[in-house]
Image (tube, rainbow, N blue to C red):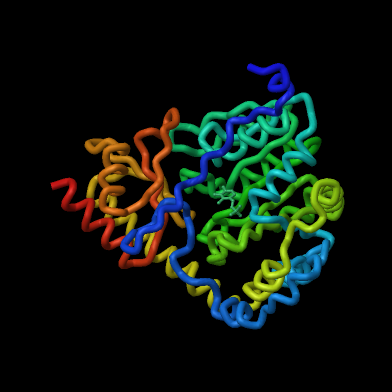
Length: 351
Ligand SMILES: *Cc1c(COP(=O)(O)O)cnc(C)c1O
């Protein structure tokens, strides 16, 4: 190691799911939405003009913040936006997790949490999910420097009931509690209603999954005006213009079409429930996912071999070579036709 390398802030980075590019592929590996964004987004794209890009975007991202506030019945002081919820979460870790006590999150969870903790030198302690892959609320009652978990959890899809989230909040009034609701629109109950009661609760959501806009990179957080102000103070100390002009315009647009949002999320939920039955019939085991993916294992077929066999056929799913979950596959819910192709392949493979 060179002398200068001793002072490098070294991290083991997060590994995103691969983005393969084959004409014939069935891409069920990064929880994207199989349906296009709301039609208004396509129309709005045509209205955008290159001349606008000459100017900086609005630093407070007003159009998007006001759109979100109106859509969710909040004041704009309760809304923070960022470049995907990854950016929002990273900013929240940086801003709120600044204690010498460990931040608590599940052992099986979104694999970015330990990366941000490493990057920002935040001590953390993982709390094991029980053997049904559920969060055990009592594990979060001990002294800590903050709490973060996704609901539903990723990559398990398992929901933590709102009453349990409130119990965790009641035991954690002295730290910030972050609920990462990337998949909340697929049937779980949001903690949003609790932000009025708990000024230390930050609820983080995204347009990447349920709004079909992973490519735009828009995430947001809801919380008390005090929390949001702290987040904005950190953001303006880092990069004032995080949200680009096209994202602001298109993000505000997507919020206008509630009917399309409801229709496409309902379709994904219906496909998910049907896929659960098909996979159960093939002998797969899984928890009751409330997300747009299933996290499945099979007693007779090792996940890694299945993953590779699917990949050969250009059916991409996600496999994590990690403790406790290295015999599982995470399968994004696609269209009915895509899930049929997956089931047809599995049926033949298991013969
Ligand atoms: C997908 C995902 C995110 C990040 O999504 P963005 O595209 O950055 O908005 C955050 N948390 C969890 C649990 C996710 O699965």
